[in-house]
Image (tube, rainbow, N blue to C red; front, side):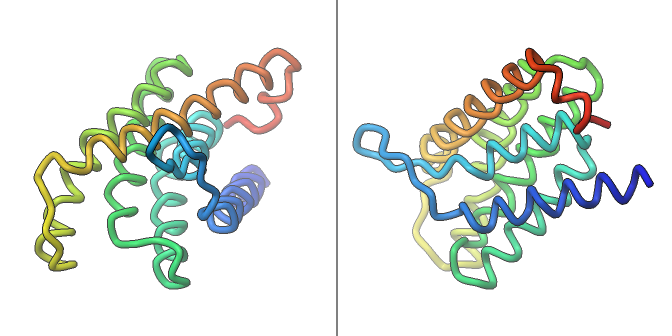
Length: 163
C-alpha cells in the first residue's frame, strides 16, 4: 500500500511538472522556469532520491516529446533531484536538500548540458554558459519549495507526504 501511495504522489508531481513547465517568472532581464526545481526538492524530501531522479527523467521525457522541453532538461533536473534527495536522506536537513538542488542543477547539470548541446544538438555553447541560467532557475524553484516545506512542517502536513 505504501508503494501505491508513493507512486500516486510521484504521478501527481510529474503531472504538475509537465503542466506547469511553461510557467516563467521574470527576474530582471531573465526568465526563470522554477517548477522542475521546486518539484525536485519536494520529491527529494518526501519520496527520496530514487523517486526524485525517476520523476525528473519522466517529466523531462514527456516535456521533450510534447515540445515544451529540450534535451538539456535531462542532466539538470536529474542531477539536482539526485543530490537533493541524497543529501536529505542522509542528513534530514531541508537546507541541504535545497543546496543539493542548486549545486546539482546549477553546476553539475549545467556542465553535463554542454556536451549535449555541443555534440547531440549541434549548438554552439560555452562550457560554463549554462551555469548562470540553470543556477538562477534552480535557486528560484528550490527557494519556493523550501518555503512550502517549512510551511507544511508548521501545520504538520508534511508527515502525511513523507516516506
